[in-house]
Length: 456
Ligand code: NAD
Ligand code: UGA
Image (cartoon, rainbow, N blue to C red; front, side, top):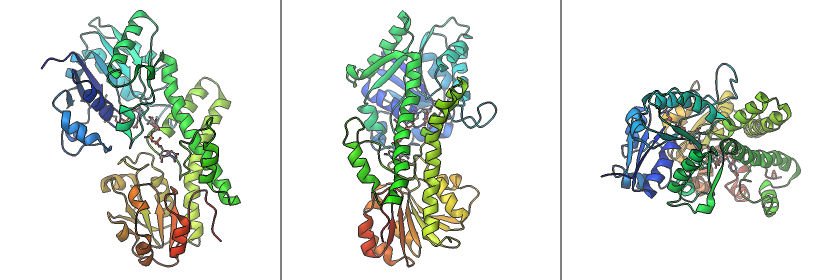
């Protein structure tokens, strides 16, 4: 079958996979190939057990894989035949050399772009889908100039705003699509080409076009603003616990102000996920690089507050369990960084589990989607934990239940049954404010939340 256009993604991760799946679903006349250097990942995309868990993703992949959606490690072939190439590789925080601990490591972007420069024989649009520092397009352009086949490349910025756990919904009904490009004739033409793909399912008035640098920086700005809201409400949660105010009530009253808005005001054990921290640190690094120390300090404080919140919660557990966790069994409900994902990157659960294990607690960890292999990788170096699939077994004989992810299943457990199987006094520490503390107290639990009035 002939296709009107061929596109590919370099990178088949949490972004490259789902974004390309939705383009393929919505644009049957476009051939979409998702490529990766990781053979195991590509094999998983071609199997029944996809490497990414997202509600709704599985059904779409099974329906259209092989129609116009393909997963492959043959990156060169995909580059050669594609009109548009999406760069969806990882851009983690640099762990070495200049900027270590803050700057984005662009080595994966660079190697993908070098590959394009080396093998491309026709003109192409290169799309920055990964989150990158502002002015990365300049570097990409320089590398692409080494192409010896006289190809013309147009670079676009098209950051992705989907969140994990709601990726399919977010991709199908985005608040906006952002496309940045050069304001030249060929730049405008490239913007139009990419825009027309999205126009298959996104209303035109939701497609924002900007200059490259605004688009690149907008992505970092959006994540910084979102993370800042969480750190702001978490900062208030600490004050709530001291004063008897309830942080969820604060969220309702301030969120009712339409200028503030009600979303993203859920106090928690801190934000996790692969991006907020890395993108904030990247922003901090950029501000330092451009000699703006006050601005750098301002955004760094969002990260500092997040670290504080995680350790503050661990300390609450230690304090309430009589400053002694040695040998005590603690059931940990949830390990993913949020519900509806199997992703544990930067999950606050890692920090909190480590804190508790350093106090020599014996953990029994239960998460409906995170695999035991992932938990073992994340808790490398520790041995005082076990992994359970059944929360009732995890809590049997435990001194405390610690809720770290807001999975629906943890809201609806039979807490009376859990209580009966536990050591007394039995404690619940709800790091996500998903259970009714009053009801638990009626059952006999000593129950604590985040930013909640302490009983008695
Ligand atoms: P990921 O680690 O899940 O996937 C990246 C993939 O790229 C990996 O499978 C890796 O093997 C592959 N890769 C690296 N170098 C390669 C190369 N040279 N050639 C081919 N494949 C290569 O990362 P992710 O979560 O999908 O994030 C990708 C980018 O998207 C990051 O910049 C991230 O900040 C951004 N982003 C992520 C999310 C999210 O929800 N995860 C949302 C928006 C934006
Ligand atoms: C976030 C952004 O929401 C996306 O727009 C962005 O595309 C993405 O980062 C990215 O660039 O990777 P994600 O990290 O997948 O998405 O998930 P979020 O829903 O933002 O949650 C992040 C963390 O904040 C989670 O640990 C979550 O539990 C926590 N959170 C979120 C709160 O503690 N309170 C809230 O009110 C909201």
